[in-house]
Length: 433
Ligand code: NIG
Ligand code: FE
Image (tube, rainbow, N blue to C red; front, top):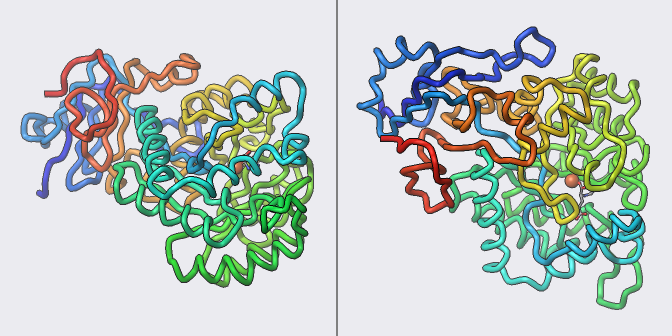
C-alpha cells in the first residue's frame, strides 16, 4: 500500500454523490461510514467497522473522527470570475434602488469598472487577491474551482490574468481550472478615449491577437463567451468559440442570462462543455443540451443578486439533464459559497438537498470535463468535506451559515483543526488526532 493520507471514520453518513440526479438516491449515502485516502485518492469507502479494520485510523497521517458529522465530496465550483481588482459594493446598493445590470454596464460600470481596476493592478496584487479568494472558497468546502479571465479585454491583461490564475493554482491547495474569456464584454475603448469599441472589430482582435497568444502561453483550458444582450451576438460568439476550439480550448457559453439570445443552441452546436446561467432557456433549449451532452450550469446566486427570475432547475432535472450548481462568484455576485448556491437551488429552483449536493460536486466536475473528482468512490480524488452537522441536508437547511468543519484536498488537511496549510481555520469540533 502507498501512503495512508487520511481515514475519516464514524461519520453519521458519507454522502458519496455517486448517484445520477434522476436516480432514487443521488446522494448515495453510506450510513455510519468511513473513507480511506491513499496517495491522494480514495482507496475505500464503506461502513466504519469494515474500513477501519483494513485502514486503521492511527496509521493515517490525518485520522479524522467524524462522530456526529456528515462527509461529502469537496465542492467543484465550475463557474467563477474570482480574479479581479476593485470593489463594486456600491453597485449592489444601486441595484437595490432599481438600477439594472444592463444599465450599469451600458453606463460604463459593471464589468468595465472591474476591467479598469484590474488593468491598473500589479501582478502581485492580483495574485494576492486570488489567493485570498481561494482561502475563502476552501473554508466553504470548495476543492476545485474554475476561474475565468475577462477583466482585461486586451491581450496584455488577459494573458496576465491567465498567468496569475496559473500561479495561484501552483501555490494553493485548491485546484484552479483556467478559462480564457476575452469575449466577456465589448471594451469601452482601446485607448482611454472613452469611445466605445466596435463589437465586430473587438471580436477580430480576440480571434487574431488574443487567442493566438493564449494558445502560445498554454495556460487556458476552456474558452467562454458572454452571448447576451449588451454583449456578443450568437454569430460573434460562434466565431470566438470556433477559433478557440482550433487553438485547443473547449467552449463554454454564458447563455440566456439577461435575455434569450440563442446561446444555448450555440453551446450544443459547438459541442461546449457547458451552457451556463440559462435563466431564459426554453424546454427546447434544454433538450438541445441533453442531445449534445452539454452540462447545464445553474448559477442561482446571480439571479438572487439581480432580483431576477431563477432558471427552472426542477424542469431541467425532470427532463433528464445532469445540471450543475455553481457560484458565478464575481463582483456582481459576491458569494464564494457553493453551499449558499445549493440552498437557493433547493428553495428557488425546486431541487432536493441530495440533488443540490450532486449538482455542486459531481456535476460541477462534469462541467469541467473532470470525472476524477466530485464523488466519493474508489480512485477519485481524496477531496473530502466534513460538516459540523449530521447530514448533507444541513447545508441548504442552514442557509447563510457555513457548516464546513474540515476539508481534505487529495488527502491533505487544508481546513480544520490541525491544518498546517496556513488557511483560516474554524474553531470548535474535536481535534483530528
Ligand atoms: O456571469 N454575465 C457576465 N459575466 C458575469 C458577471 C461579471 C461582472 O459583472 O463582473 C456573470 O454574471
Ligand atoms: Fe459568469
